[in-house]
Length: 277
Image (cartoon, rainbow, N blue to C red; front, side, top):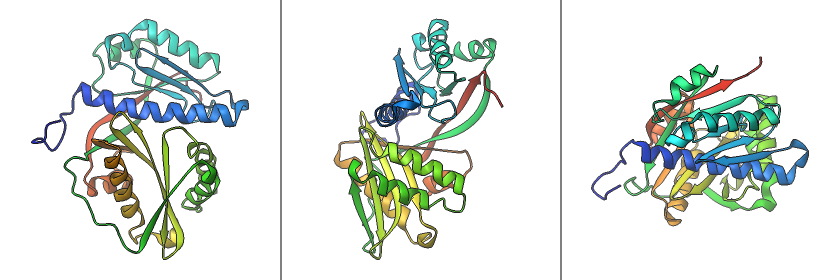
């Protein structure tokens, strides 16, 4: 990415960087799960630039990243190995696949019985050219470490309190995620009171943003804007060139990201085989 070009070209090299960042963050999450909750049987298989992750049969982290981004990562031999990995854990085979994949992968997936089940927008932001915002004086950002993981997870869950089942899920993954290697977790305080959360993971110059949650009483008061700018500043300080996040196409999350300067790099498809009702 040159200084004269405000946005990197959306090409195979960019997709490899973005997918690699998400793969690394999720693999570290699964490794943290394996250490903290060994009864889950969490496991990681890395081969040919693809990361296959098992985090429990029903976990959204149970899938692969990076499939098809090189010829060897689109082969039948690799698909056999990935399917064996998921089957050994009693899980369906699921793969997040970039549209910049090797062309032969698509018919190969169809011939093996895969079907598309989910879309996601992968958004990116050039940290070199993005305008810097002045920090809000009424929002204080606290960076926490793994010792405060439970406090971070409880607050993150509080942002989903109107959906108890989802809140419990968020708290559960927050307890693990805030302890994962490479993860940076932040809490926003509004007028001295905890108000929201955000998180970030860095991999080879790419900052993956996640973990956004705001307590209902603090919404529409600039909490997430402050958390976003703080994380972008932190990423720049660590030498990152790009920030990324993922969202459901057309969702509030995507629109908020675009309002903050992010652009859609591409829309990704999750493919599944052997998925049960």
